[in-house]
Length: 190
Image (cartoon, rainbow, N blue to C red; front, side):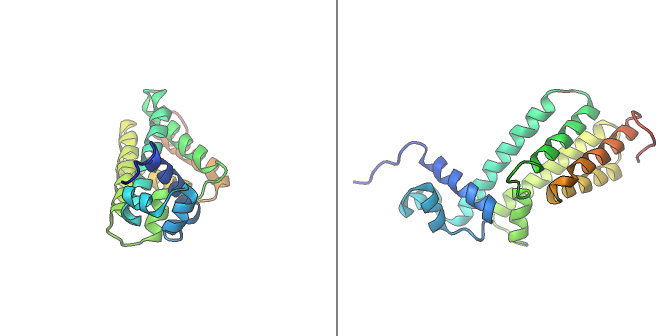
């Protein structure tokens, strides 16, 4: 008779895989390494995640949930559109400066598997599209144009992928653009 897996086994496996995938990349991590890190058997791993693609999709879904929770917390404290945009900028800047930050998990996956049309790629692409839409809504909320949204998104992409030491510059630049548009600073952004 088969044993019933312990409660939380799926989460234990996913947590172990998430740490490995984020540190080394999905392509570089074998399922055997996940088994070892999770302290489970191969059969148990495959019971919960029949393929590496399913495990990678679950990992990216977990990261998405964590990102959404962090963004919601950052935006919770203000209803002012300018303050919300700047709070989101600050949240990203803080994240990229944390020890162990190795880039955006979604961008990393898409860079590892360019042109793939698998479930993890769809999860990553959906997150990035939804994230971009959120930034666009915030820019629209201050009366900003699509051009201003494009400029801010370009800076945000640089913030996610650039050296952490440049986070302050990205925050200052977005602050300058947003405050100029909102009439709270010098100059005017289009």
